[in-house]
Every structure is written in C-alpha cells, then in structure tokens.
Image 1 (tube, rainbow, N blue to C red):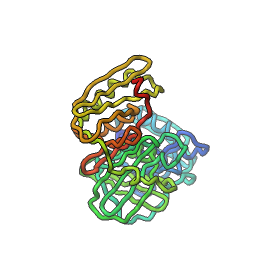
Image 2: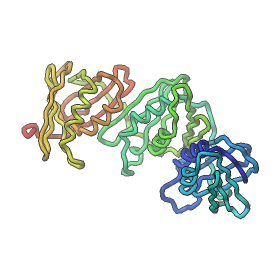
Image 3: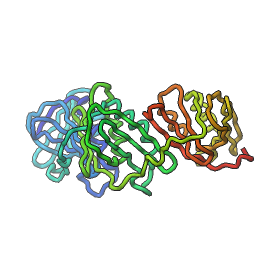
Length: 370
C-alpha cells in the first residue's frame, strides 16, 4: 500500500475515527484504526463492537492496500508531523513507513483481515435532521443521562419517531429532559434507546451545519448516522423505556413566568456556598410578584429576590441547584415558564409549544431551618 494525503485531511479523519477506539480492551486489534485504500478511496475505520465509525478522506492512492495501525501512536505521529503532505507505505511484512518532509517513522501494523468492519444494515427510508438540530438536541438532553450502569436504559436516550415528529428523552432518576423536533417527512413509528456514549461522540464530530443533513437509519439492533463522508453505527440498548407520558402530565397549581438569565445567575451565585458533595438545596419561596431564593450551608448563607409573574398558589419548595443550572444553561429562551403542583411534586420548565420540557424532582428540607 502507498498513499499520499495532506496532514490536515489525515488528521481530520483520524480525529473522527479514533472516537470509536476503546480505552480498554482485551483485543489488541480493536486498539487500531484501519486504513482501507483497497477500493478507490481512503477509508479510516474504528470499531469497538458497540460503536463503529467509518470516514473517507481525500488523498492519492498509488498502491491499494489495507493496514491496521495502533490508534494512539498513529494519531500522535500525524498530529506532530509538519503541515505538509504525508506518505504512508506498508509492505507484506506489515512494516509501515510514515514520512513527511524530513521526518520518517517506521512502525509495525496488523493484518486488516483480523479487523471487524462495520456490520452491514438494511437501509430503509432515513430520518433526516440538520446537523445543527441534532447537535443541539444532544446538547440539550445529554446532561441528564445516568453516568453509571445501575440501570442500562438510563445511560441512553429514547429516540421516538411518530409520523413527522421526533421526541428525544433522557433521565437519571432525579430529572427528565425532553426535546420535540418536527421532521420534514412522515416516518414509520419507531421507539429505540441510543447509548449516551454514541450521542456524545457524534456531537463532538458533527460540524453543525444548518444546511447539511444527517440521515438516520434504525433497525432492530442498530442505529446508523450518515453525514458528509462519515458513517457512525451503534448498537441499541435493549429494553422497554420508561413511560414518559405519565411523568410529564400538564396539571399544575402554580405557574411562574421568570427571566431565565436572572434565575440562572442567581442560582449560580448561590452554589458558591456549596462544596462538591454537599447536598444543600436552593429554596424557592414563591409569592405574588417575587421569588426569594436562599441557600444555607456550612460556609454561609445567601438570599436574593427575583421579580416574577405568578398564577396560582404561593409555594415553598427546594431543589438540587445543579439540576436547575444544567437545564437553564441549555434553554435559549429569554423568559421561561415554571409549573409546580406542590412541594413534593416535580417542577416543569416547558415551552408553550412543548418544544422542550425539563422535569426536576424537589428535595425535602426543613423549612424552619432555612
């Protein structure tokens, strides 16, 4: 094999493919990026058996061939080479030479035959969303997946397609995030759970164009994302997802209209008094035209008033401040609506159109001590 490509193109492709290289594995071949230049284009492929990525880059193939190279070493070599054309050659003994200007590296590759290519899946009618939309939807929901495997379903996100609507849901037992997107085409009804790791990696490599689309294909066991010259294929998480509709009922006793930035900045200031690991709630004391926020910790205390518009009952309720901050940071609206039922029921932050819904469970506190 002999191929020539610019450092910029090669580094771009390596940085995409390496997202599917596992950090720990008992199979050395999975620690590699496969360079496949056997079929008229240069493909870079990585696959950890749960997540696979294939991307094509521009370059010149002088001699076709296939070689698997240790991903970490290969990416570091490419990153530190001069900004010029890079020549990669390998022979039947798997000796691989990487040269650029006066720099020359000689490393041993592995047989491409041992590499696990991305499985072929049946492509039906795709679900298409813009790169920007998919990137935003992930940003606005990924923070509320669970970060441990106690319940596997909580480590993923629900993708639910119903006619021309896509609903994306994440939850971790303390909060729920919901984003509703309108699709340009009517699609077959589907309901699958996509691993959070897959969505995090896609978000990192998506350019985020408002004009270019991502085509999404769903089968019984896999989901595939295709954009530009990249394919990301992931296994789905098995199991029946939680009954979301029962969680996001629209009944409320108190409705509040509030400036999002003021609320976010106030809670953010309050968390200065909370050490990591402390479970001190932010208390919201809601009356007719204002909300008093206060927090008391071992360090000290703080209170602040914010003007609001309120319909319904007064309320005294407490929340984990981090959960509120996480939700407020991803909402772009200048003013938001909070809906509450009672001090022991969830608070909802939702748009008038249900474009987004965030559910946050309250925490118990002793009102006399706050």
